[in-house]
Length: 220
Ligand code: GRF
Image 1 (cartoon, protein in one colour):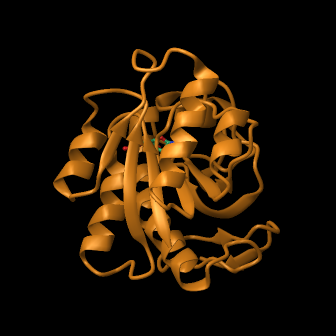
Image 2 (image 1 turned 180 degrees about the horizontal axis):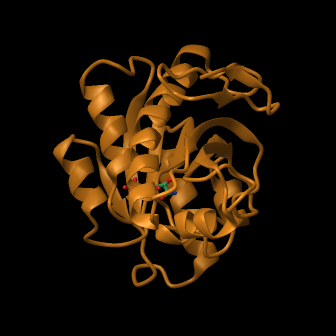
């Protein structure tokens, strides 16, 4: 499955995916392009280190947001991508993106969507919101992307317990570690089965995993 990855910053999820590809742990996944909406970010260095072609389509390169999103979709299409992964991509994708790229687009988000998703729910804000709400658990969601922020159908979730002594930073660190493993696991399933929806998720050692129907398929 030919993969494009959209990034905006650190690129630790991108690193997890490209390291797994390099190790032969994702035989069905072929990274074709990494596209950033911000120049000079660490994620671009990660892509270059792994020999994956990069593009920067930033506001300064292309000020019109619709035209920029269309160009991102077109770059994915031209690279022959079948699927696009938003791995820390920090902008909403508008209709011209979906018009230019008709492959699957998926996003990884560090909470149990629909809890703590949507506008402003990025970085530490997500984990601060989990703690402020007094949630006993949080997690990671991988979902299809539509034009609505954090609103496409859920494909897979994994749960992460919240500890009494957690602060946003400690929770963010623990969730991020789970993200890396869960993303690789989920992409592996995608590469093998070609289709995520309706397939059961599993992750060794994970407290629990739910599938798209919300049914628990793996207990503690
Ligand atoms: C991750 O927590 C991801 O779930 C969210 O943004 C963060 C990106 O981190 N969408 P990184 O750039 O992959 O390190």
